[in-house]
Amino acid sequence: MIFAAAIAEAFRAACREEIEAPKPGNVHVFAGGHNMEAAHFLTSAEASAGPLAAPGASVGARVLGAVTASFDAVGMNTNLGIVLLCAPLAAAAERGGPLRPALAHVLAGLDRNDADQVFRAIALANPGGLGAAAHHDVRHPADTSLLEAMREAAPRDRIAYQYASDFDDIFVTGLFALAEAQTRGLTSPLRAVAVYLVFLSSFADTHVFRKFGAGTAAEVRREATEMLLLFHSRRGDCLPELLAFDQSLKARGLNPGTSADLTVATLFADRLRNGLPSRRNDD
Image 1 (spheres, rainbow, N blue to C red):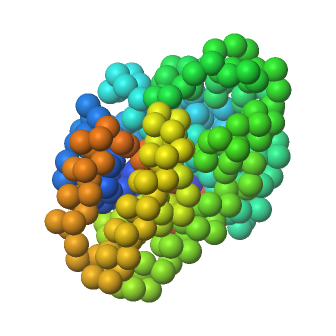
Image 2 (cartoon, rainbow, N blue to C red; image 1 turned 120 degrees about the vertical axis):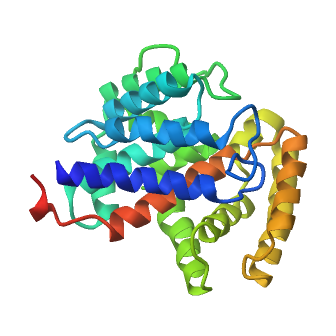
């Protein structure tokens, strides 16, 4: 179907743009890190795009299918957070109409089956910092809807918070940062760097927080704020400084993966809002 293919390509393009951006602490084409390389992420994006955009699929089925395909392709967790964020956006785009109201409808309809499939995907990916939970442990069958599980996790996980807030960080912080970057004349991949640094400086990255605690997460946020000021003052012309910050974070084992996931979702949402064909052209 034309429309599904367009959603899949929007996802691939968002993933490519993000991996081409020199995002400090995260994997990109300028430098690998954390035992991963850019090729792992590009392969994962290609493998997971089809299941993510599967016509008529539930959010849970999209997540489980995409994570399974990605894990089969590269044998490691590269894009769980990306898929968790992009699957509801893909389902919303399939509905048609303005993206955020459609997304709110998708999120409101999430049920226990969605939770079961997402829990299986999370357990398969086994992300860093995952431990036993007092409520809604992903290693056990779901006992509530996916939306309720995400609401319970929202205070400690920024990806879960998106489900609880109708993706507030994406539609407010992320898309505003993207529009501002474009107003400043930044193009790909520097506009993705701008979005990433805004996320990293706006709140504690929960991937860093889970693994290293509040103090380290706050320090990374402070350093990102300084880098964002430099980035803006030089209109993005600061690759040596970005790569030095990148090396510093990686030397400390710090991977702001949540900020990178939110960046992909922002780029994906932008493409879904502005780059899809009319549903009238769909097969």
